[in-house]
Length: 135
Image (cartoon, rainbow, N blue to C red; front, side, top):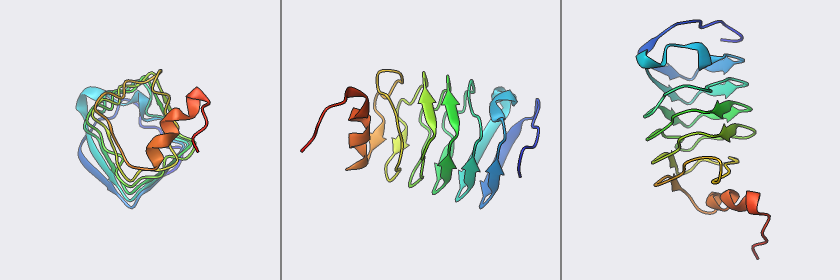
C-alpha cells in the first residue's frame, strides 16, 4: 500500500504481515481504536506522530525514514527491526523493547527511555547526541 489515505479509520485486531507500507500518515487515525501488529513489514516514509500506540509490536520490520514524534509507544516492541533514518522526538519510549533493533537514532534527552531494553553494541547509539568518543 502506498500513499493511501487512512482518514479517521480505526484498526482493531489487525496484523500487517509481510506488507509494504509507503508514505502513509497513520497520525490521522483514531488512536482510541488502534490495536495492531506489524510483522516482517517494510514501512517507509510513514508518520505515526501524535498517536497513542502503546504496546504496538513491530517485529522484524524495516522501518525507514518514518516519524514517531509526540508518540506514546510505551511497552511497544521493535524486536529485530531496522530503524534507519526514523525520527523519535518527544516520544514516550518507556519499557520499549529495542533488543535486536539497529540503526536507530534516539536522543535520550528528548525522549522518555525509562526501562527501555536495548541490545549491545547498538545501545551505544544513545550516546551519539553527547559527542563523546568511545575507544
